[in-house]
Amino acid sequence: MVKDLVTNASYLNNLLSEKDFNFINNFDDEIKSINTKISEQENTRDSIVELISSIADVLNLNDPEIDNYSLYKYSNELTSVFETVNKNINLLSDLKTKLDLLDSDIITLLVNAENSTHPMSYFDNIIQNIKSKIDDYSSSFEKVELQLSTNNHKINSFLNRDDTKKYLAGFNIVLNNVNSNFKTSPITKSDYASNEKDNNILIISEKDDKVFLPYKVEEINDYLEQFPEQYSSFESVVAKEFILPLNYYMSHPVIARFREAYSLCRDREAKTIFESLKYGMDLMFNRRLNPAIIAACKTQEQLSNYMNCLEKNDLKHFTDFEIRFEVNPF
Image (cartoon, rainbow, N blue to C red; front, side, top):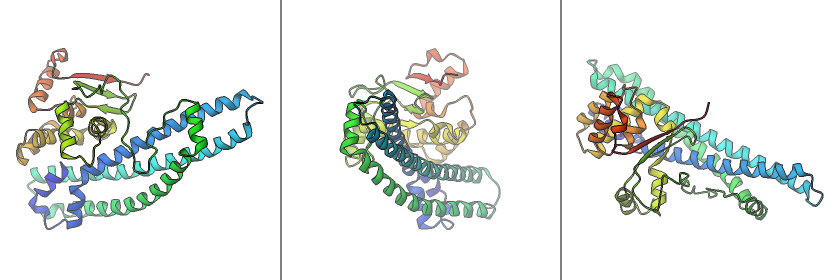
C-alpha cells in the first residue's frame, strides 16, 4: 500500500533515491516478515517456559532416584537459552518500532501533501527525515540480522540436542519453529482453521494477541498457485496471510484504518489511486471502526454493510462474516 502511494507521487521522484524506492517497494512485506519472526520466537519462548516449569516441578520432588545435579545444570542452560530468545524478540521488536514510525511518517506526509496548498519545498525537511530513518533502519537491520544468526545458532543447537529432545518427549511438549529458516507459525484456533474449508469467522483475540481473519478456499489456492516457492501447504498460507499480531492493527489504529481501507479499495476493488486515497482518508478517523474488521472485508459492499449495522447499533444483522472478540479477564 505504501509503495503504491509513493511511486505514484511524482513530486517524490527527485527527492528519494533508488535505494529509498527499493526499500519502500518492500515495506509491507518487511513489516509482515518481522511480525512473523516475532511470533515464531514467542512460540519458541512459550515452549521453553513450559519445559523450564516442568523441570522445576521435578526438582521440587527431591527424588533420590533422579540425578538432580545434572537436571539442575541443564535447567541453568535452558534458562540461558530462554534469555537468548528474549534478546531476539527485543531486537526484532526494536526493528518493528522503527518500521511502524516510518509507516506513520510516510503515510502522514502523503496525506498532508495531497490536501495541502503548500509548495513541495515545504515538505523537504520531512522527506529528509524519512530518508534518514530509512538509512538508520537499513543499518540497524544488518546488525540485527548478524546477531539473530548467532543467537539462532545457539538456540537451535541446544534445542536439537538429544537430552533436550528426551525432556521434550518426556514432558509431552511440542516445540515449534526450531529451525534457522523460521518455520511458519502453527494455527492455534481449532475452530478457526478446519481441514481446508472456507472460514467465515473473524477472531480479534487479546488472549492470543492475534487477529484471525476469515478466508475462502479459493483465496488460499490462489496463493499456492501464484507463490509456490513461498507456501508449501494450505496451513502455511493461513498462518502467514490470515493470522496477524493484534498490534499490527491496534498500535496505530488511525494509520491502520487508512492502510486497510486503502488496500480494500485499491487491491480488492481495483479502484484508482485517487479513489483509494480518498476512501482511506474518509475512514481513518472513524474511531468506532476496528481496523481488523476492515481487513476482514472482501469488498467495499461488505464494509458498507457493517458500517450501516454499526450506525444503527444493530450488528446482529451483519451476516457477511461472524465477529468474535476475545478479551483478557480483568
